[in-house]
Image (cartoon, rainbow, N blue to C red; front, side):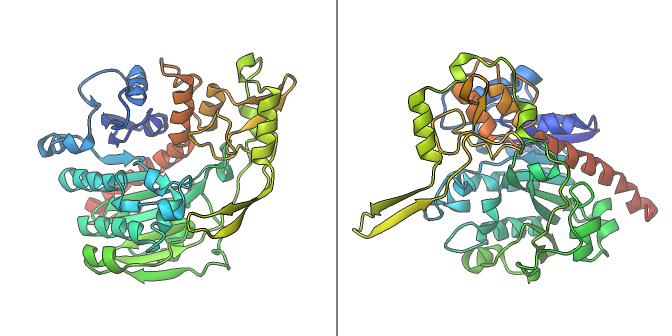
Length: 410
């Protein structure tokens, strides 16, 4: 079994996906929400996985060096907090790695520096690749430099879950790092970067892509051999939706997926939904306005006058397509909220339907938390079906460990 340490565990999305492969064992997990008195996500976690010493509910910065050193980890995973990169924030408002939650990446670095696991799997919003707006790509470059200095290579890929048969159009960047002395690193060291991204690297076998990258975005190499402080101060470049970094040499390309069958929204809908989820006439009219195309004259604080424009959105949602990206505001009267229509009228998605959009078992978050919090947790969660596929791939490459001793070309 591959031993896993789960950071920023939330309600356990990584664990649901990885343990679904029957190849992983989570040996330690931490979940802490500093802004909330009630630790509802952690309570959900221990409802499913038990209340014991290796399920920790405290500030990650308070975990001591000794505690970290005593952990048993082949793999460290984390959907590290993404509020500072979220598409829900404006470009001028984002703070990136310097923000209060952005700095939590350095806690990941601390765990890696002490524990030295073979593998690392992180998930974040794709905005991370171009954050902050004042110095495009710096935050991600700092992360890549950190992995380089710790002796890890990195592959990343922005994956739209719906393109690989999940029922939600949720686009997230997955970052897979592996120590330079692992069997996988040794086996693939002589494979060129283009082949790695398109065919033979970590992601392509389970998330296949077309043979050539996008013509609109020129693939490129970036040599990043500077000290991390220089990277932080001066680096700026565009990272595309896929890439690989080995010993400071980066290749990045905009890959085009080979889309698999689509799972439509209708497939996750419940029957006989409670009346409380249905909208009043007033709420329907509000949604029609919010989701409709509009142009509004506005005046900035400086006195500058401008026209705010936004296009229309489907109302109600199409049953024949995967659902849109679910946000933490799901279930409220908000432009981003899903509204579906059935034989009884217009309604919100139920908490169970939101769990299904992310691939969780029904009623996973029905552990005593409020319905508002259930929606919030699913808006923050990852798509566990993607994690399961990634887990199967990690298990596959972990078998390459024998090539170190045997010099096998298996």
